[in-house]
Image (cartoon, rainbow, N blue to C red; front, side, top):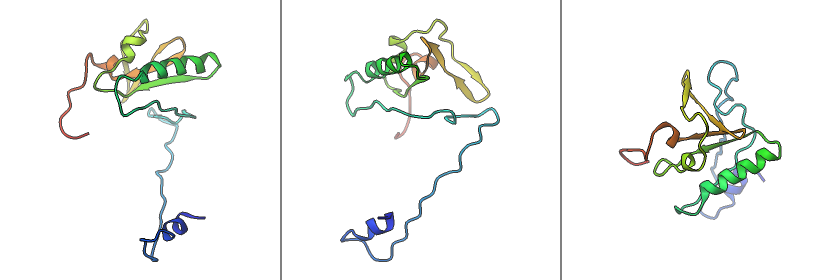
Length: 129
């Protein structure tokens, strides 16, 4: 059953429904901006509550997957209390920028990126996020 049929089956939906599904074209892997072009899978570790060991879970999961032979990276998106730099301290923790991209740090063959590696402490932000 297509999207149009599913929506039309809702009791409050009108019969004149048009569903358009679009996605941006894939980014070219050529040039200096690759983004996530080489990422095959993403595992998100999240919660609506702080202090429930999301970072610990992410680090343990990444290291376990790396030991099983996967190429692994952690993007730690916590801007209020970035704890990844406290848990994982690479030998060289100076973030390098090549073009417009920050190059991930590495520890035990796990690539790492966190706001905490770029800036000490939490982010100062204005306005709604």
